[in-house]
Length: 318
Length: 176
Image (cartoon, rainbow over the protein chains, first blue to last red):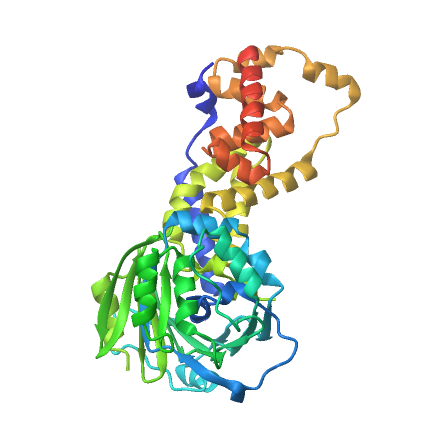
């Protein structure tokens, strides 16, 4: 008896069954659009990571007032930072969720997004008039609108934890900046609106929100923290040093590019500098993502359409 | 606490949050799930019903699929295992003790007749395996998983999976 015989029971499901099941799942999709958290919040939160601090904060005992913050981060530019799979694996092995879990306070939870029936209703819920693409692929139509509420997270630095992470990653030439321990950082993600378009079996999602803000206490050396953050991502010593010195840490959001990102480039979106990422997650279609910021608002367009179409859509958002 | 939104361990989550291509997923995974149940239960269960329930559960829970924690097929087969366990609990036959000896004995005349078909003969032999062994065989040869993936789904160590499979295949060979 060999493996061929062991596979003797294997047979394809009947086409009729496959078609029946597929149709049943599609009916469910139409009947009950899913409510789930959106990636833009995660994107905004990575600003804290960009500052090299997200993994090392704990819940502050006392709520600090906004007035005490002097350094305020707002997204104006995006910069992609490749993170290789080995570093991803290492970060996972460090069990950062456990390390950070007790150190993060959700001040205000956005909860799942609420469905909207019109752009006007979405605008009222989001607190701003939604901008939408004037150009759409042929046959595209809006099939879903939703708005997620405000999300506020506060984290407080734990220098010991940060040093432990750095040690575990072999980062021995940098030191945690003095005065970091106990400092609180507040990450504020304003309401996020999403419009989903369907064209044939393809979907495109446009996310937009006022720029997320990260309020950092006065005296925190953002460049030093940024350099640590870049090293945690896996950048070389030289690259991290150079990069941390030229970047404007108060307006630039670092976007980690995981191994699933196949390509990355800067793009011009109606006069604003943005980034375009092509990603191929496992078991998912090739997805094109364009991020840009304009007029104090951050946009993300995610689609399985070709990149030229996605950029054209982005350019027509008004 | 909504840690998913703030953990560095999920740095890439936003980019990975691209919707799975459900058509592609469906086409790739349907035969694997379907055959997992075929190997697991043979003709004693409604394989299409179990497969359908698995996909419906997966569809319903798709927002909870965490790409950074498990490959999609691993996640889907975990759901299939739960569906199989439910089915097993509900349909486990209560065999009178006097029949147990018959079940444990060698091939019956019916078995001999079935032997004309290797597939059917295999089904008969699989039915005699302990549950755990049969499940691992189903994951290996029905769902087409490697030992590492099976270890992830079952929580067994990879070496343990290898040992159990080796023993199970040896037992099948001995009875073939």
